[in-house]
Figure 1 (cartoon, rainbow, N blue to C red):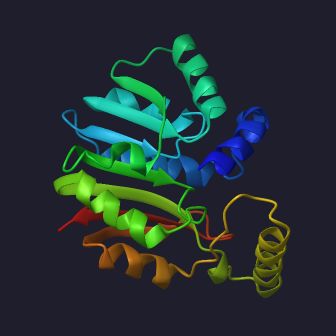
Figure 2: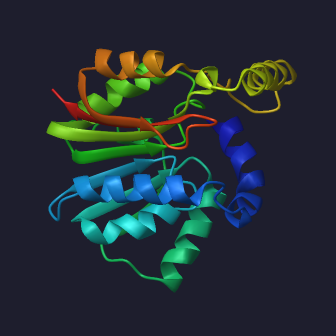
Length: 213
């Protein structure tokens, strides 16, 4: 975690200035996510970055905890929260290990643009299952680069992932998922998928809403 946190601390300010590449896809999945939230929900967002999404959704629920391993990302999120206060939103440094004792402690757990960067996604999905209350929701959006529909772009992604891993340009491996592989891991962790789709289609980012069985 330390190496990853150090990497994202360096990237944080630039990351916060970068525009969302596909605003239409972002807004669509934001509204789909909002449709699943209830006023009584306890929500945890993992890998929240600078908490931009948290600031837009936290007002819909009872409590919203936005976490990131990067203290600099968290600092930027807190700056935003100070400028635009949202009741019930807490922004803090943390990851799955931080909430290991929160069995059944959340109604919704979210991870957006995160799990292709997690060292062990299978373990992460199982831990999230345990953190959710019965019938709780796991909402995620994950790059599935192996299913890029354009051949040349797909090959480019494979080369990029290999080079990044070989040169250790990022602290953890980038997973080159297929959609069916990703969804199988989520289902095998004990979830029922109730909505899914690629938003955007290229490169494919799989939006999945799954209910704890």
